[in-house]
Length: 230
Image 1 (cartoon, rainbow, N blue to C red):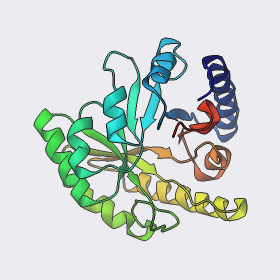
Image 2 (image 1 turned 30 degrees about the vertical axis):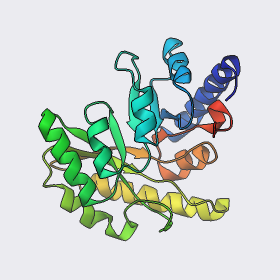
Image 3 (image 1 turned 90 degrees about the horizontal axis):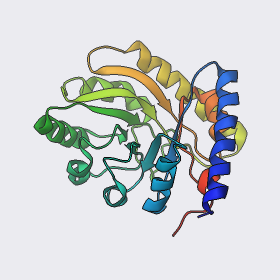
């Protein structure tokens, strides 16, 4: 991890870049800082300096260790979520980014119903059909959305994807398809489906994500904090 001065400078510079890209795209773009493997002290620093409002954790165990209800931060779960871990994040995160199967939906429904609250979720889409990644196949997205309509404690707020690591021309094609999937989801609005979040783009691909993918939420990590602490 970089020192605090370098991190603060990186965040300010990145926010300026996103502001320019967002202005060019004609939409606001929210930054959710990916803080996987970063220490809690980093989140305390971000909160104390009001540098960012939103942080995302990949692993529930790390989230539990870093969570502070009085921090003023908005916490997100941006990584794969095991069903048996939902109870640890219910009511504490503003958004689950990785809803991709009915067994997970069942547990989210169960845990949030217990608390009498609604879980805002993004459906993760596996654009490259990569075995190593979670996510719904693009061709199965509409059917999955229809299956989610029965859950009264889940609100589908949009889509998320982690794009394949491919050359730029191929990547742009994936982003254009992702944008079309989000546009289709918007047309399917109704009931517990109220999409307004198109989440794609990380440290290495946030620019094409905004330009071609319609992204209004990016998840940078390395560009802000330097290499991960392993």
